[in-house]
Length: 118
Picture (cartoon, rainbow, N blue to C red):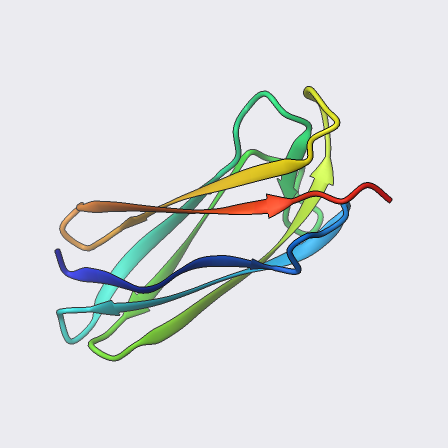
């Protein structure tokens, strides 16, 4: 596999209240000199926690692209967590991630985020 996860996905702040922006951080490297990748984040469809990016409507997924090289690279994504339709209250949310490299090979990771009640 061309992409290596050097440090697994983390979320900060964790625990957090909602609505709140969190930062997802992970360290990646490629076995190639330069490689475009796609990073997809997902939340379970049934619970009340959703992603929200700026003025976009709340969603259960968001994607981004990155270019990774042969040295460790810290990848950061900032996204809002909001309450929307679904079951709740929720105390623990799993954010699933799939990294897809330039050959179409996918690699999973995840982070658990504790939701505090205000």
